[in-house]
Image 1 (cartoon, rainbow, N blue to C red):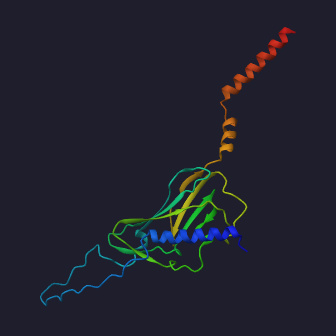
Image 2 (spheres, rainbow, N blue to C red; image 1 turned 180 degrees about the vertical axis):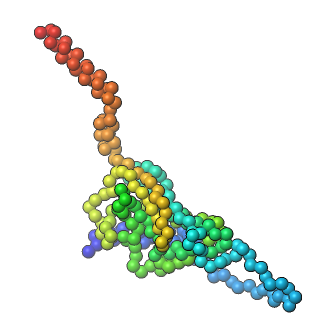
Image 3 (cartoon, rainbow, N blue to C red; image 1 turned 90 degrees about the vertical axis):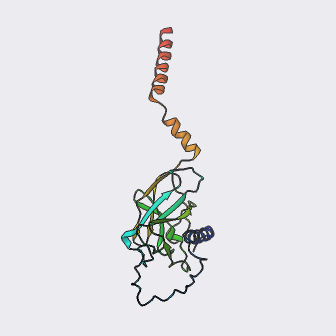
Length: 223
């Protein structure tokens, strides 16, 4: 049974995923209107297709994918923005499937998946299967704000937080997978102070030790 807090997470996740699709220019577009074209005269040559005209689905090897995080170091209360940059490397306009069913944002730590946008994905999503047109050699970016709420694969909120340390963002679009984008979650203020104390220069510690020895030696001579 989902926790009440998890329901909030689901709501945020669904809104976020829908926002991703809309960010790619899907939805609300007007249907193209067919225009009448004059008939070719019997003596005219066959038309030569424009090499940059729409060519259907983009070839898999012509689709580029990149993961980006807006900040390499994220403060304890900050919510980093994740980006999925999709590129059409083809010389012609073509379609790329960018529906929510194809998209996935993954956060990994030490090679283990600790969070995925699929964990709280909606079962019934009208944007699950959507294709959008990409101009030749163009890019489109989907942006997603990570709420840093830890959930399991069934979207149940756990009692663990994401501990400070180094993480990697990986984005997937169907079978296409990006290289990892590294980022770090900073420690809280109290933990930072403890680190600063434990990392005092050795020279300062040595001087303090010498000072203590001199004081002890002075006390002995007085006796």
